[in-house]
Every structure is written in C-alpha cells, then in structure tokens.
Image 1 (cartoon, helix red, strand yellow):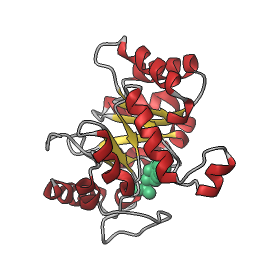
Image 2 (cartoon, protein in one colour):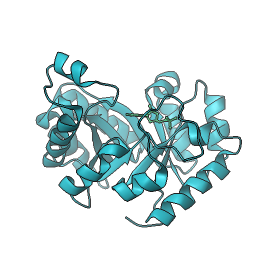
Image 3 (spheres, protein in one colour):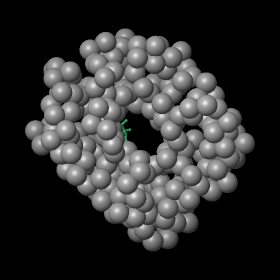
Length: 235
Ligand code: C5P
C-alpha cells in the first residue's frame, strides 16, 4: 500500500448538509477520503455525493446493498455513475449477488472498488443463531470474507480486532476497511471494542474509517493530521 494513498476515510455522519459541508471545507482530499452513509444519502441524495466528489474527494458510498443479484448490480452501476471510489454490499446476499454486481461494474473502464460487509458488529452470537447463522461471530466473519474474496470482491469492512486473522487468511492485497478506531486520547463514544489507528494498521487494516474523533474535534484538520502521522509511523 502506497504511503501517499490516503488511508483515512472520514465518516460524514451529520444531520444536515450545512454541518457536513463545513467539515468538508476544512479537510484536504490529499489526506483523507470521505464516507457517505445511509442517513446523509437518504436526506441529501445523489446530488450531495456529486458535490463532495466535485470538491476533489474520493467517496466511499456506504449503503450496504442486499437484494436480488440484478437489483444490487443495477444499484452498484448507479453508484458508479455518480463517480464513487468505493461501495459495499452484504456478503450474506450470496456469491451470485456479489459476482453479478462485480460483473456489472467490470463492464466499465476503471471500475470503483467493491467491498463486502460480513457480519454487523452489533450482532451477538445469540442474535446470529436466531437468524440462522450458527457459530461465533468470528467464524461467520472469516467464512463470509472467504466467500467475498472467492466472488472476486476487493475486500471487506471489518473490526480492527478481526484484521490480523483476515490479513493472514486473505493475503496482502485484500482490502480491510476498519471502523471502531480511536486515538488513545479520544472518547470511545458508543464504540466498545476499539483499537488505536496505529494498532489497526499494524494488525493489517488497509483503510481506517474514523468519524467522531475527527468530526467532533475542536480542530478537525489537526485531528486528521495527528491520526495520519500515527498511521504513517505504524507502516
Ligand atoms: O464516529 P465513529 O468513528 O464511531 O464512526 C464510525 C463510522 O463507521 C460510522 O459511520 C459507523 O456507522 C461506521 N461503522 C461502525 N462500526 C461498524 C460498522 C460501521 O462504527 N461495525
């Protein structure tokens, strides 16, 4: 992974465009990418995504598609039309859903990256069993990451705690995009099992999703620079 490539993806989780935009204007596209998720996309729509891309940022569109293969492939194609850098879907939609989406994207020159959500970190082993996924969350994550890789996807979203095992099993080129990252000095907010940015990179994360440690900082650019310095030192 090139040191020059921004490995921090700032989660743009805001209730309004004005609030989000005041952060966007303070950040540098050479230092970070931006993640737009379900709340902002549902409020502001594709025009907001295009506005952010127009400002020079790579956008990770975090809409976690999960539907029949043709519908997911069409949604991925629509996201690619917006010019996003990365998008995601649920690996539990199955191999054919992932392969169909990837085939549709591959028809384009220079397709966006497509990664999978394996198991939502909010789900306990009991809740997983209830929806028909026996085994521990970790076992399910590893199985679905293997399936995503077999379907040709570029990587997965995972907890930093899972990064070392997935890096060992899935090889050097598979993207591991990890939320749940907190600098040692930052508040945990509602995250429980966190890692520092340096530890997440050392564990094998390729990209870090960081929200409130940057978005809620008194000086977001300075917070971003500090995290960037920490991950550069980590390798
Ligand atoms: O503010 P914070 O750094 O906790 O934001 C993390 C971002 O990553 C949020 O957009 C959150 O929805 C997302 N996320 C997460 N944990 C997961 C999956 C996604 O925190 N397991």
